[in-house]
Amino acid sequence: MILYTPLSPQVIFKDHSSRVFRWTRIKGVPALLEQEGKERWVLVEIHSVNLSDYLDPQLQPGRILKSSEVYE
Image 1 (cartoon, rainbow, N blue to C red):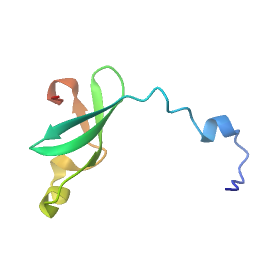
Image 2 (image 1 turned 90 degrees about the horizontal axis):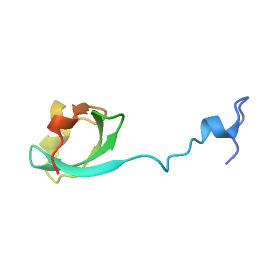
Image 3 (image 1 turned 60 degrees about the vertical axis):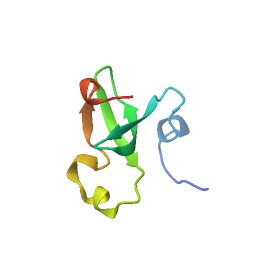
Image 4 (image 1 turned 90 degrees about the vertical axis):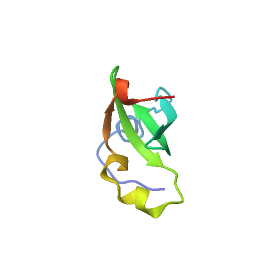
C-alpha cells in the first residue's frame, strides 16, 4: 500500500493494542462494544440474522452507551 501524505506513519497508523472490546447483548442481539474512557462504550458491530435489527436505531454502530447500560 502506498500512502502519499505529509503526516508521519505514527499519526496515521495508531497503536490499537490498548483498545478494549467486549461482546454483550443489546435487546437480545450480540453486539461488539469498544471502550472509550471510563464510563463510555461505543457500539462497533452487531451480529444478527434478523434484518430488522440492522434498521433499529438503538443498534446502530457508533451509538454511545454508558457503563451502566453494558451487560456481560
